[in-house]
Length: 104
Image (cartoon, rainbow, N blue to C red; front, side, top):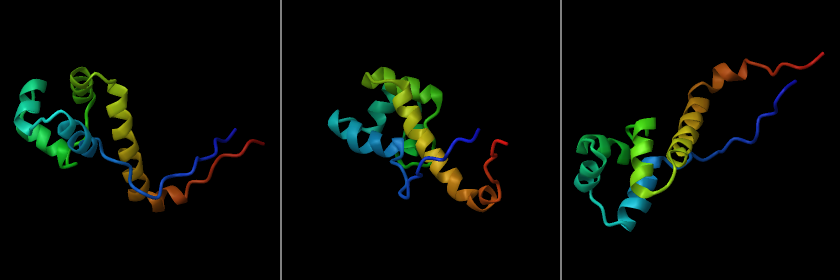
């Protein structure tokens, strides 16, 4: 049995750091220091997420979900989409040599 690949995005998905920066922090009038203090992490950690240089970890997803009242899956699914998009492009040549298994 083979599972057909669903159409992959041509554009990079939005990083959770961009969502945090553009949607959540501005809507709630937060700055890096106040968010870091509230979440119990360093300002550097928040800055790295906001600048899309750090992935949202499961622990960070739990912290963000608790604070903003949404789910950790929201944050992790956004991160997963970015990770898969980047991996697909990084390993495109290697992946092209792997052919789907077909049933006899």
